[in-house]
Length: 142
Image (cartoon, rainbow, N blue to C red; front, side, top):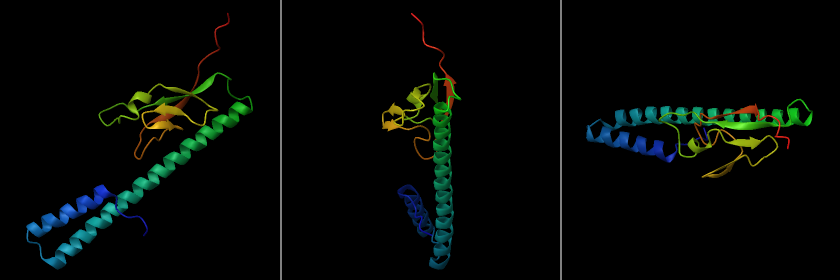
């Protein structure tokens, strides 16, 4: 009940109503059609918000588990987090350059990006990136 439309969806709804007016749809029918479309857009927005919140909670839980495992000695001291970007035509300008970047398990700042420091994926709504844990191996002994 409290979730409203974002500006993009509100603009789509306004354009839809303008088209119905231009097509000569009677007022009562037009109001029903606009209300139905608004309901669809709101449901889509609620789902998007829920998916993003779930992804953020899962990712933070994973990072917390890795920190705990490291503190208990269950992970190699050389283990690091690696950002994996979903590489395709929908890859955004924030996530694209982060692919393959590494961050310490203990570093709460995460990854430095064009949007500032990001703790880890998701970087934004509908982000398809993920993190993985890798062992970078032992450092070179002189």
